[in-house]
Image (cartoon, rainbow, N blue to C red; front, side, top):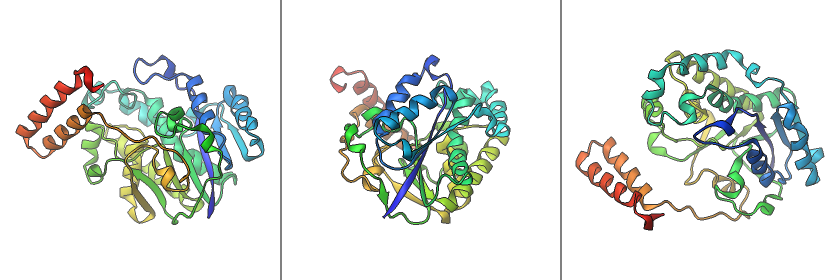
Length: 310
């Protein structure tokens, strides 16, 4: 069994002030505290103002010797060229309102798209610094959202994560109908195809994966678009499929139980009926079955505003 090294990062991009997708820095710290008792070596990239608090969380679990905090003075300078390209692409109101959900952060906030791009950058940097070897997993700092995403018991994260992974980059597919969909349509429809919560791969493939992500972001911004890491991961996969293993999952974080965390209690995934009808409506529309799509849409509206459905 291979023990994994975990890489994560946290930077304040002003999310507490957003009108949509609002989360404070304290909330993210609490999210991290929920899973931070994991016994693996964890490398955290962050800014100076959070460094001591993050280290103290790991220290409270007796894991300070298995923790490396990397302070970055200005995360915008990690790859300034990419940040500038994302910013230029997102200055266009045409781009924003081309998107299905123009108020989502990936439609208007350049820092958000840039910080999600840095997932592969930070992990490749940990390899370059000699801090991470063997199999390495990126985990979002807010992984599992304090139990809301699926794993309700914090104490169950007190384990050493090990698993025999094939020597591939492992990505987790939440919606496989879009794997071959044109990127133009994915950006427009804002499909969630590959999850961003975790990415796993061997040391030698992480720099390759980062280069693929960087090339993908350049390609996207050169076309006047920008997006978060989910679309970039899909583009990277399309550039070099042989180095990847895709895993179909039904929840954002459920893959951890299947790949080394079998003891974890996971909350059953329940989709509300109105959400199901919305999805069926979208599928029928894509298939140009407009009559069926309209029927599903009416059912969606009825159930969406029926109090018994909530």
